[in-house]
Image (tube, rainbow, N blue to C red; front, side):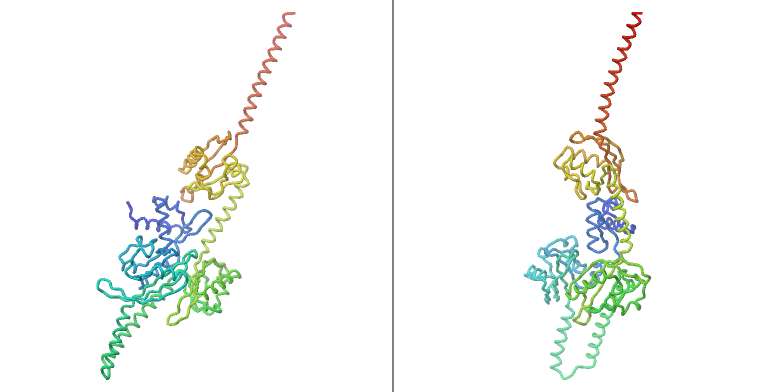
Amino acid sequence: MLDYKDELGIITHLITEQQYGMTITSIAAASKIGRNRVAKYLDVLTLSGRVGMKQVGNAKVFFLTDRIPVASMLNLSSDFIIVLNDRHEVVYANDNLLNDEKLRRDDVIGTAISHLNLSLLPFPNLTGRVQQALEGVETLTEYAVTKGGTKRWFRAKMTPTALEGGAGGVGIMLEDITERKMYQAHLEEQIHADRARPATTADELNNEAESHDEIGTALNKSKQLNRTLIEHSREGILIPTAEEGIITFVNPAMAAMLGYTTSEMLGRSVFTLTNDAGVQTLRRAQSHFTENTDDKGDIQLFSRDGKTVHAEIISTPIRAPDTDGQNWLLLINDVTDRKRKENAIKFTNTLLTGIIEGSNRMIATIDTDYTFVSSNSLYQDEFERVWGNKPEAGKKVVDLLSHMPAELEKGLALWKRVLDGDEYHTVQTFPGGCEYDIWFFPLRDEEGNIYGAANILTDISNLDRTLMLFQEQDIQLRALLNQKLSETEHANLGKKARS
């Protein structure tokens, strides 16, 4: 039996191989993993940022995201980070925190922070502090923790944040400042010692200078790492000025997306890269930036050759290093291919709906969960007349026929047969003496996997009654004909006898 990592790897590999994404049903069929387990793994991958999800009609399509997962970037941080939702439940914890607390991610995600008893958060009124952050108050606290006989110092920052979907949340960032505190204590001792002696030796001054050089080298390495991450990101990154929108930084991915060099984009207004609707989107993001809040939306950008690039844009304020100011950061992801695919699907669905609606037969389709996806008005009217409910898109067969158990069992059996892959033709009688000629056939994707089923109905009740009437009239006509023949024969026999 495959373990958690193996199954997660199989699902990730399958999505990687499909340019336009896969549904839960197609992943379950291809991986031979249960649908419910596939759904749970996809939730984990989506939360971690490794997989994206797009709603297409009634289906959820999952695809490999091009952006660097936020979770992966946060795991590069030396801080201890934990994110809570508005119910004080953990929605994210980085590896540093999990390793220090010796916890598994599954033990933490979805658990209330007050139930975890984290040694790194020894606040007696932790719930109150979290609630205060949810109400918009940012707090900063320095405190000491003794663990395993070792005393460590932390600076805890609790700040309100917005989760995916716009829900409120709280970000808790714990910075280990033990070395800084030790260095501060060391300096205080030095100052005390300096007061006791007239001068400091040259060797001690050299040691202090070397220590400062080491700290500076470490900071430069950290900055270089961040720069490397940004330069190699496949997601476009722009930093415009807050007022005029003049681009002050652009990474190579962003320049390549629009066909420019980075030097050609520097100094240009970000508002010249889009149409009027895009300018409004950027203005809204700009106003949210001044309010120190995030924003996201869809935007159309113009490439150098005049082509339209469909993109998703995320706007967020970030603190400028060594200052108290904020920078306006724009993260831009090219979704042109996905948009083109979605438009093609919408066109196909519109065309198919028109064909179905224009048919003089009753037509309906369901997915593998026995949920109606589409049906024409003839089908809906007849279904409502016979069973009392209208099979609108999104409604389940089990709910529509729950008041008629026998009919529900019959209907599920008919649909199950076709969802198991059997294309067949049948004649069925339903309540009120209605008789239908029905053709069932499965719906398959490009790989042959079944993702739903369809049926086409013809009401033959009147046809049977017409046939019976014709048969009765035929019998009467034959009887009358036989009677006339008999009378003629008797008349002929009488003539012969008289002659």
